[in-house]
Image (cartoon, rainbow, N blue to C red; front, top):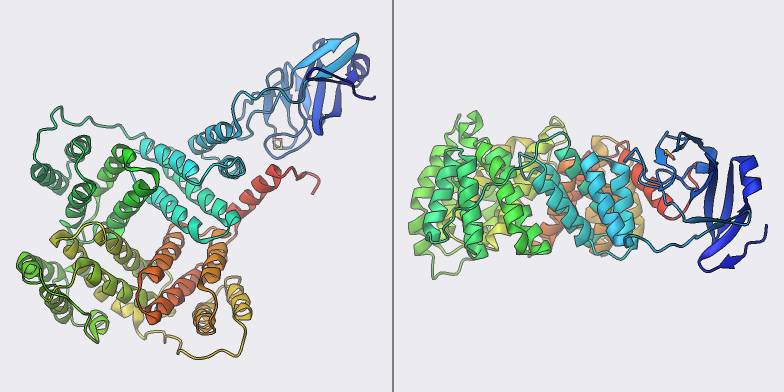
Length: 583
Ligand code: FES
C-alpha cells in the first residue's frame, strides 16, 4: 500500500492484513521493519537481527518473546531488549493504530548517541568476552567518528579493573596495537584495536576483579622514602604494601620521572623478571598513559603491582647461574655502576667499532667489560639500550630455523625487553636503567646458540625489479608455512629496501599481514617493537636489519586459521548493511 506520512509516523500496513499474516516486512524511510501481531497488539522492530542480520520476520513470536531462527537469540518484543547479550538489543519502533491502519515512527529520537551506544556495547563485549560484539563496537565507534583513544580508554579501564592479576599480556597487546594502528591504514587500525581488545577480554574472562587499596592518608612522605618503601615491598613480594605505597606516590603528585624511576628500580632490582615481560609491561603502561593522559595513572600503574611482586626472577634460573654465574657477574658490575656513571658524567661517548659484535660474542666477561667501559666513557643508558636492542634484533634476523619453533620466543623476549628498555631510558636515566641494559646484554648472550649457525643477513645490492613487485612476492611468503618462507621473507624485505621501496608502505602491508592472522601476543608485540626500533635506529643498515627481523618473525608465525579476521569481517559487513544470511 502507498505510505502516508503524518508527523513522524508513516502508514505501513492495514491491521487486518497484519492480523491475517501474523508478521509482515515493510519499508519506511528506507528501513526494513518487521511488524508483528501478537496477543491482540501490534509491534514493530528492525527486521535485521542485531546479531548477524537474519530477518526477524522469519523468526517466531511466543509468549511475548521474539526468537531469531539463525542462532536463537531472543528479544522482548515490545522494547527489543535481548535475553542474549551476544546478539545486542534490536531497535523497536513506536507504533500507532489509527482507523484500522498501522503507523510506525521509523526515526524516533535515539536514547543515546552512536558513540555512547557503541562504547556501551564495547563494555558489554569485554564483560562477556564476545569477539563479535567487540568487533562491531570498534567498527561502530570508528564510523561514529570516535578517535582510537576512545576504545583504547574503554579497554584500559576495563582491563585494569577486572583482573586481579593486574596488567598482563592483554593490556600489553592493546597498547602495542594502539601504536601499530598509527602505522597502518584505517581499516587495519580498526583490526588492530579489535585484536587488542579481544585479548583484554580473554585475559579478564573468569578472573576475579582487581580490588584497589587506598593510598596512605598522609601525603607528607619524602619521595626518596616512597621509592625505597616501594622497592622493599616488591622485593619481599608484598603486593598490598607495594600498591598502597605506589598509590600514595601518585596521590602526592610525584613527577612522572620519579614515578617511572620508582617502577624501573623495582623491575630491575631482580634480574629479567618473567623473561623480561615485566619491564615491557611497564613500558607499555607508561606509553598508554601518554596516549590517554596521566590522570589515569591511579588506575594504570597500580595494576602493574601484582605481576611485579609475583614475577619469576632470572637469578633463580639455572641458565643465569650455570655454567657461568651471570647473576653474580652482573652484581659485581652493579656495585661499580655509581662510580662509573659519575666518571662518565661529563663525557661524550661514541659507539666504538665492533661494539655490537662484542655484545653478540660468547664471552660474558668481555660483554660486561664493554658495557662498563662505555658507561665510564659517558655512554647514556639510552645509547647503550639502542646498541643492545640492535644486538637483540640481530638474534632474530639471524635466527637459525633449525632451532625448535618455541625458541623464537626466547629471542623475541630479549628483543622486546631491549625495545622497552630503550623506551624507558628515554624517560629516565640513572643506574637503575643501566641495570636493565646489563640484563638485556646478558639475555642476548644467553641466546647465542639460537644463532648457531647464524642465518646470513641478506647482502646489500641493487634489485632489477620494481619495489611493488618485490612487495607482492614478500606478502606471498606469509601465505605459506615453512622455514624456507622465513628465509625468503628476509631476503625479499632486504631487496625491497635496497630497491628504494617506501618503508611506510612496507609497514602498512606487514601490519595488514599480521592483523588478519590469529597471531597471538608475541607476533603482535614483535612487529610493533620492530617498527619502533626501525624508527629509532640511526643507521640505514640497522633500520634494514630491523625490517628483515620483523618479516622473518612474521613469516615464522603465519599463516593461521584467521578466525578472528572472519569475525571482524562479519562485523564490518553487518555494519555496512550487507545481508550475510543470503551470502
Ligand atoms: S541470532 Fe539472529 S542472526 Fe544470529
